[in-house]
Structures are given as structure tokens and as C-alpha cells.
Image (cartoon, rainbow, N blue to C red):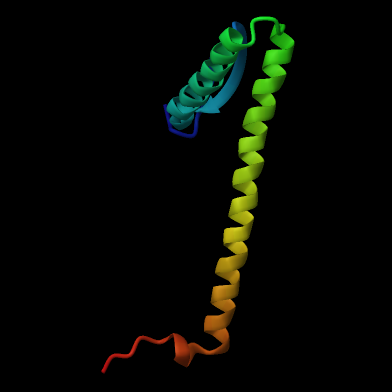
Length: 101
């Protein structure tokens, strides 16, 4: 099996079994994500026993979406800084050279 070949995986998150396809090489990544999401669900299941499964799964979905958008925002800011640095180097390449004396 090639690393790019797709396989069908069955995930268990919040006692909900779902199937998804994933590249063979990404199996470990998918299992880590499954474990993190299910772990947060189980932690919150104990912390918030009055909430139903749908509420808890929505809370978990929001938490991970929040993580995603925070990282996306940071990535965009870092990209902007890198682009600005490259522009400065292009505008004044002599100032960016290392003195070899």
C-alpha cells in the first residue's frame, strides 16, 4: 500500500462511531486527533453531567474550531511579518548583507 492510498477508518468520538477516508500515511495523525477530541469530550462529560451529548459535542466542536482559527490568525500575522521582512531585504539588499570583513 502506498502512503497516498486512501483507507477507511472508523473513529469513536463521544461514543459516536464515524467512518472517514484518510491517506494511509496519515493514520497516526487521525488517531491522535480522535484521541484528543474524544478525551476532551469525556473530560467535559464528567465536568458537565447535566448537559446532553449534542451540547457537549457542540462545545467540543467549538473548542477545536477556536483552536484552529487562533492558529490561522497567528499564521497569517507571521506570514505578513515574513513578507514585510522580505520586502525590506529586496528594497535594500546591501543593508541586509552580512559583513564579511
